[in-house]
Image (cartoon, rainbow, N blue to C red; front, side):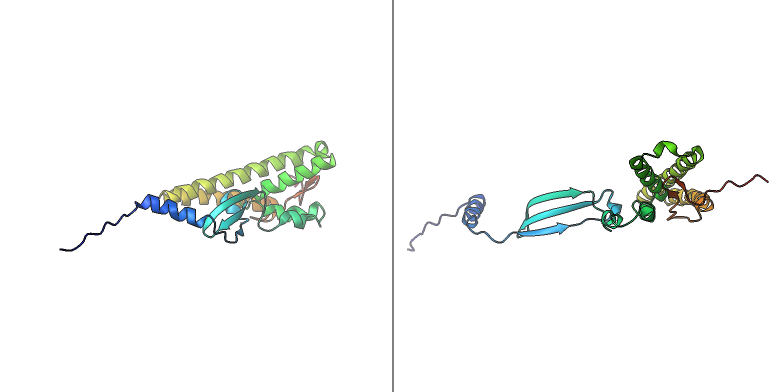
Length: 194
């Protein structure tokens, strides 16, 4: 007759808890990893400073407000008007609106925002509305394409092209317009009626 031997096996949860307790004393080097700044197409520029312990994220500090091109730093060495072409590229869906927003901010800082000609103010509002409609058409078309409606995408882009034709006639460019100036507009001339 053979002798029996009794073997005790702990359940898996107890073994896992024991393994974690055994590893608490083992401290590896933590690594700091920068994620970002990410691209503006992600709807908000974000940089994450991650602290990693192996594959485990132990801490994450978000920092918002960065642009991936460092435009804020570039602007430090320019005059106000020299920076206007950069505003075209801050949000490439509505470059005209960015031109206007930047110019209005500088004009307010300089205390001349209430001295702008009415014609300038009207044209700036029209520019912002064209930019807004164009951006919305792109958003609607891209959304429709994402859900399988390619025809809607084609229609919205057709209408968007009409807006870009108007923008080109007004500013001389279709996309990166650089149209506003501090205190006014670029290339704004009143043509006599024929």
